[in-house]
Image (cartoon, rainbow, N blue to C red):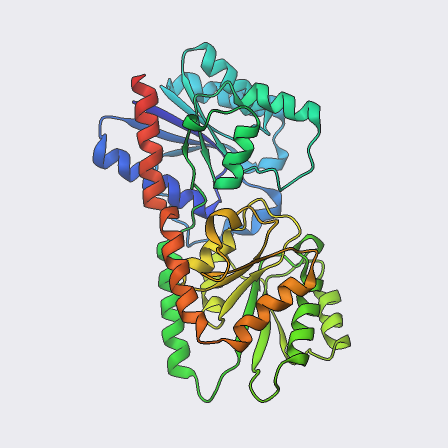
Length: 387
């Protein structure tokens, strides 16, 4: 069995964890097989900071086609490089990344012409963008040429089915993985340090992690926190709102906090690499992701791996799989501030629920284990190669 995976960029830490686990499954269960990841480029321009990410370990066979940013590669040169690696590797199974790159789509049709089975990995859902009918028709024509599909979760599986994909062909439905081992280890170490250093009654924290950008709906989060904080019992409320990340909205959000007279309760920590985020989660109690649009929201996975309850907008793709109201957190409409306020107030008034709801998060996140997903993917490759 020879499996070729095409991926956009080398510096994508969670995909590197997944590819490493896939490679381990091959070495352990199918040592005679060949597995190769063709990384089109090193990075996307918006993520060039990952060049300095020394925490990522690449324990899988890969080949970088262009030693520069993905954004600087033209469709024609990508197509030429992909066809070259395909013809040299001679795979039995080709796994491409989505259908947005025409070079990969053309490679898919070429592979099918050659009798090679094709898997499409999809992160898209009906939530992330507005759709036009002619584009959906084109997508349906493209995706239904594949033999199997891996998707992030229920919303992406539902979207594939709306395009005409048969449910039985979606063989992996929980592929939104993070590097749970590194995240959990760093979180636990940070918790221990915090416990040793902490004195007195420290404030509890709601935490947001991500870009400070308009689509993240952070103004509403600050206004909701302000209302809840001001209306809560001053004798018992001792909560802060922590922002971990940076972006174009930072200054405006800071000014809003001052205007609402809650600047002492709102903390802007700045941006940090992914492996340092658990240090901030360890100082926090409840994750909030209020986005107006979010294909998935991997930070929810990260928080749940750390045993935290979550409050998540219903426009985030992960909610159908990961968030259950009153069990491990709450889902709210990002257009209705009062729903968010109700969720924030629940934890302020019931801090004893944080631990039990965090434990529920650990249970719900288990099916998204990178090792579990890797094994499912390899089994799909095996079945396709034998068919």
